[in-house]
Length: 245
Image 1 (cartoon, rainbow, N blue to C red):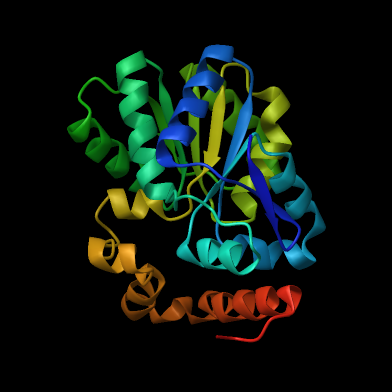
Image 2 (cartoon, rainbow, N blue to C red; image 1 turned 180 degrees about the vertical axis):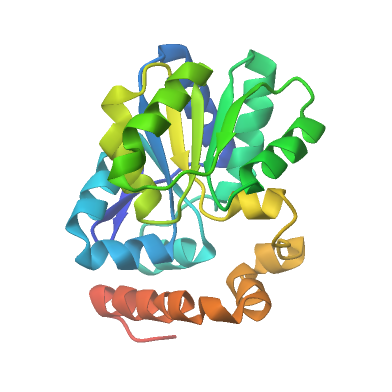
């Protein structure tokens, strides 16, 4: 698979079609595969969190989620073909799961949010089978119970909404104990959006690369996280040895 490296983190040069084709391959193979939706925040965290960087680089698929990555790739001379947004990929994976008859498990977010997200996904894809929904937490003392729930559900696709890096680290930690899951992916705030708790930015803002601005205006408390975007840009410029144009 064609991949590039951005500040030490592998990013796969895939389109939505490529990513979905890989997911279908993973489901046919039946063995466990972890997917990460890499964005500038992930890359910044990985600069100082070595275990997170190791987990990301070991994933079966790292999609480029964020126009910041496309900008960085161009500046580094290794352009990416398309942004593959995690929220949109979840939607497409669920469409595929409904077609194939693969069960999906929604794990994480606040109490009741995953169930509301499942209702919305069922509305979109009536044939989709939801194995179970559970909030839980990434705490180690809850691992055994959660793994048992996932296994009991028979789900082959697991979406985990604990936010980075907790969700990626949790998935990697329990991977060997998941009996039926073929695809596991951290999804951040996707359940909140599906549940209607947090509205998504208009499409024109997403296409223009200003989804992060919209979310910041809606949720000012995110300012501590959003500083990572200009910091990411500074790191890329520094690593490329070029001046801002």
